[in-house]
Image 1 (tube, rainbow, N blue to C red):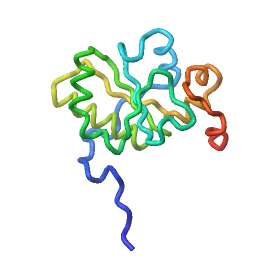
Image 2: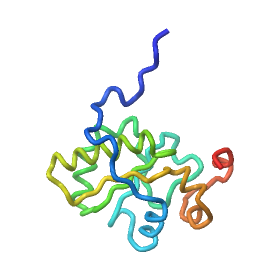
Image 3: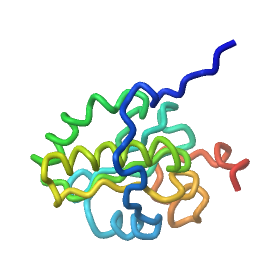
Image 4: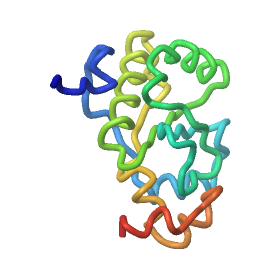
Length: 150
């Protein structure tokens, strides 16, 4: 029996394995004072299509297929003058971290010091269990999906 190879093994490891991060309180402030899609972009990397809900304004890109989309994403975000790209998954300790690091590496390779690629600390689990002010900014929220995580 052979060991299962992780999905990310077919891609190069990020050069900066620990990208910058943003706390849920910082993101909450951004959602209250700025416009997702204009000032920043939120990317939910879960492949279960927003199971349990998603942070309002997020787009869903599966981590397992996003690597080859990085040049297109960069082009779109750059032309839109997006300043911050925020990546998250369930906990932001695997998929979110890799995606933010890969995208950050791509920005560095282009000499772009203006666009930030960051992870949401604690991912969607931290957001969904952070309190009513966070849940109020979720689309499709299902409390049952988060019961075992509290």
